[in-house]
Amino acid sequence: MDLYHNPVRTLLGEGALGHLPQIVQEALPEGRRALLLVWHASLAESPAFRSLSEALGDRLIVECFPHGNPTLEQVYTVWEGSRNHNVGLVIAVGGGSTLDVGKTLCCLYGREIPGVDALRTLITEKRWGTPACRWVGIPTTAGTGSEVTCWATVWDPERGSKLSVDTPENFALAAVVDPVLTQSMPLPLSVSSALDAVAHAVESHWAKASNAVSRALAQVAIRRIMGAIEGLFSDAPSIRSLLSEGSLLAGLAFSNTRTTACHSISYPLTLRYRIPHGVAVALLLAPVMRLNASACDLSEILAAFGADTPDDVERRVKALLQRAGFATTLREWGASQEDLPELARHSITKGRADNNPAEITEATAADILRQIF
Image 1 (cartoon, rainbow, N blue to C red):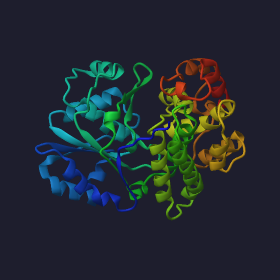
Image 2: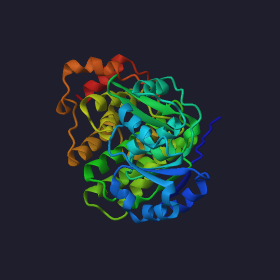
Image 3: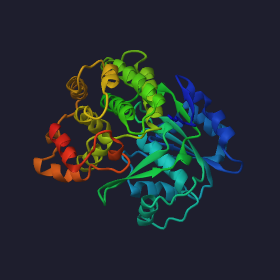
């Protein structure tokens, strides 16, 4: 029996942000404060957030998190700076990294964490318990879907690994998806974010944990995004709305299934060579498709792309990345042939690689990496 579940109250469309003050006032516990976590300080000065400040007064505190791929040290710094403010609601505004920090903070408040090592242990051993407060996700990119998932990524560069803060109790109270917030995204980020959302949809469709609802959402998301993405290069009207919708649908799809081999193999590429996450997973789509062709039916996925073969998908994805100014081989990102075995060893992420329909081993991961070398 298929089971689909996502409890996030979702507001989508231009003007959605105008509903935020009411959502916050209804959700903020009496005597508690709201933390507005923004990726850029200028966001806190926008009309919607000014009205929130006017409504809450000193019950609203603002923190800025301007980093990508949040590290343990960065998360600890934000937690330490806000832990004594009696936070009862986190409002995370930004890309996937900022949203990941916002939802992680909900799992850290109310706990004694004497240092970064203790934070690493808490996350590694999954000892965060019940989240101390709820959060609201407001994406400023169209790609991560983080506003409707219950897990967050924290990077540990010292150990060369990716950690996950993951509990079904940490779904957002609400997701406010207003395409207006994505209009200032530069072209490269817009393209890579859109392709990240496509990867979410593709991987949710073939994941072992897939279900009928997630597959239906995934197919619509792929069609919506791949049908609109060319418009980014001419800044065509309504493109931002279409991409925001596609990203949200992809997020809803993989919120029930998690990702698979593309994401698993991408993590060491981002960690070691700073390849943007969306670029890394996009480059891996076609190679993983070729592997999975023997283990699952790709016909609905290919039809959503308007493609006949994984090679067609590869040509289109690489063309989009190149037009956006991205290198499309590992060699161009600074990798060498000698790096591939070590990268393959770090490509088997529990919960991602084992969710792939075809078995992912160091040997298959190395073959996939050679295809994009």
